[in-house]
Image (cartoon, rainbow, N blue to C red; front, top):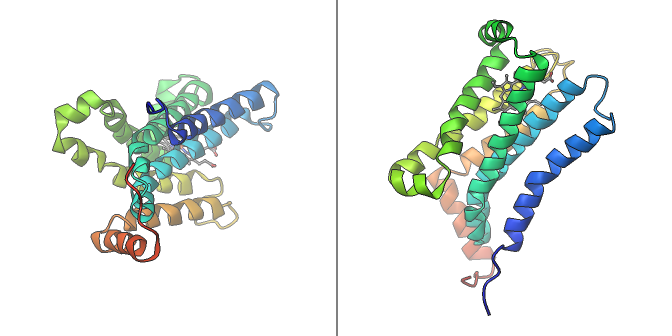
Length: 216
Ligand code: HEM
């Protein structure tokens, strides 16, 4: 029997990639994006971008724990969705929030730390997204993996951006910081699981406690 061209997991990843955009579009058309729709769109696209980045970071430890190797093959698509939502987030900020006023924008990038952190994260994401094609994977060889380790720097930068962007400032506890704290905890866990002893422990956990995985 011939193999299906698209696996169920691939289907789920692409469905998940499209659903937030569709939800935002419907909410916009139905006028359900709060009294400040631009700010709400910035929040939703930012949160979605970070969620996809973390999902792509979760693939390797999840594959080590479960033995389901297909998870590692979906990392790239999840990372690309993260980049797409980040690009939408930044475009909304530049075009709708600042009305393409580049002078005001440059002034605020220099003076507001959260914008500076977001911009740094976005600039670092560009080389990752543009080299995500198979052509670049082959051409860059080992350097491709090295380059893509930038995500270990990008994710904490985005979490810091998140903390500082939350209205009320993280040092002022009146701001709603429970969400950034949750995202910071997940990011830290996913980065810690990259450390060789913890990675080894995950694999041992699987071989000791879970049934052996049949090869695909
Ligand atoms: C030039 C780059 C960036 C700019 C100018 C920018 C701008 C903003 C602004 C203005 C907000 C605050 C919205 C509010 O008023 O509540 C925000 C929040 C946020 N941004 Fe960015 N951002 C940038 C890059 C990024 C990137 C690359 C990511 C993720 C990959 C990201 C993720 C987030 C998240 C998670 C939030 C918090 C959303 C929430 O409050 O629920 N941002 N950003």
